[in-house]
Image (cartoon, rainbow, N blue to C red; front, side, top):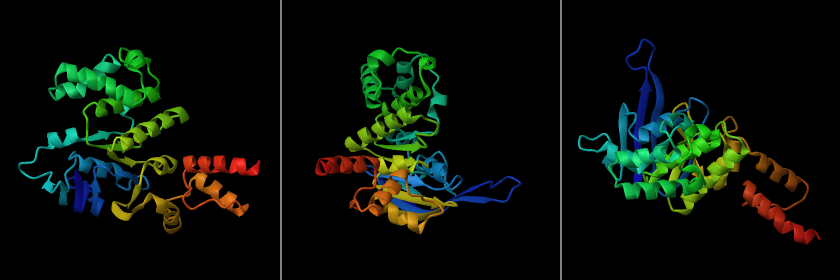
Length: 284
C-alpha cells in the first residue's frame, strides 16, 4: 500500500469569524506501508491534522491524497474500507475505552466489521499478546482495574485486532512512566518485525530513534525536511529550533571528547549499550 500527498492544503476557520488559518500548507510526500516514520514538529505544526487527513477524517481544501493511486475522496472510494486498513491511535486513547471488560473492548472493532466470533476471539488473544498483556490475566479484567499504561496498551490492542496494514500513532508515550514507555517501544518493534509500517507523531526523539527509519519534519503546516534516521544528528545542526540531540547523542559526544572512538553508526540507546558492552572485555 502506498499513501501519497500531492500539494495538499487544509485550512481551519474557513466559515468562522476568525481569518482562515492554513494548517497544512502545500504538503507533498509518499509513504509505503512497510516504512517506519517519525513525524516531528512543534505543537501546532500540523502533525495530528496530517494523521487525520491520511485516514480521511479530514478532507483537504486543495490537493489530492491517494492510496495506491486512488483518490480517497473520489466519488466511488470506500473510506470505511480505508480505515480498516489504516489504524489510527489517537493521543491518550485510553479515554476511549468503554466496554465492561478488556476482551469486550478489544473485540468491539472486529465485531463491527461483521467478522465471525471464532475469528474475533482469536484476534483478541493475538492483539493482547502483541501488546505484551497475557490473555489469561487480562481478558476478563475490568477496564477500571488497569493502570494508565495498561489501558493505553489495551486501546492499541483494539486497533491491532482489526488487522490494519499500516498504523498511525499520535504521541503514544505522552504521560506514561518509563515502564509504559518501554512497552510502547516493544509494540512498535513487534510491528516492525512483522513487516508492518507506521507513522509515529511524537516529541520523544529517544523513542523515534529506536523505532523509525525515516523522519518527516513539519513547521507551520509545511514540510520542512524528510530524511533517513541515520542523518538525524546532521539535521539537529541544520534545524536546531526544532530538533535537539538526545541524551544518548550528548553522551556519545562526551565519550568522543574523552578519546573513545564511538562509530558514527552509534546514535541510539541500544546501539550505545552494545558498543559499551563490546568495549568492556578490551579494558580487562
